[in-house]
Image 1: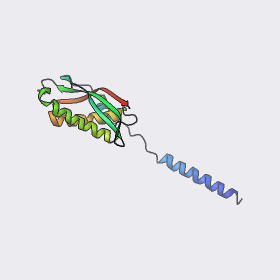
Image 2: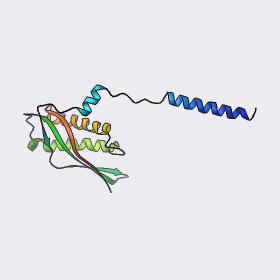
Image 3: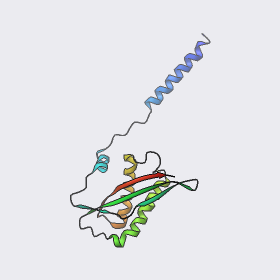
Image 4: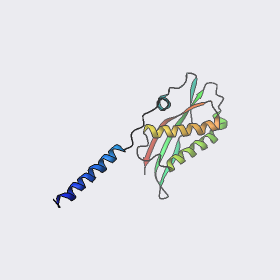
Length: 152
């Protein structure tokens, strides 16, 4: 009986720990109507798409060295009659969007499964907010039209 007691106590402890872990595990938060709408929302009827010329290149660094590059192309989804002039606003808009991409890269946004819906939605929202601060409420959304990560 003395040899059996430690085994029984170990099993009880193991089962209690497993039960507590199972019951306290984080559950998946149910998607709200707003989250689904933001992810799959169609463009309003009176919009037009304006592609930004050129690509954005974001280096991914490791120990001070470039270990891979992310290349992106973007388009702006704007209200018709928007009055946005890329000729006048492109340089500043590209600089702002590139800074958002650098911040995203520096926080690990382009690591692992960087094309997951949640990760891309976060990036698009951040890009949209930054672009709206520059060009105004005429901007409906930012579209990522190309995305590539190339390892060195």
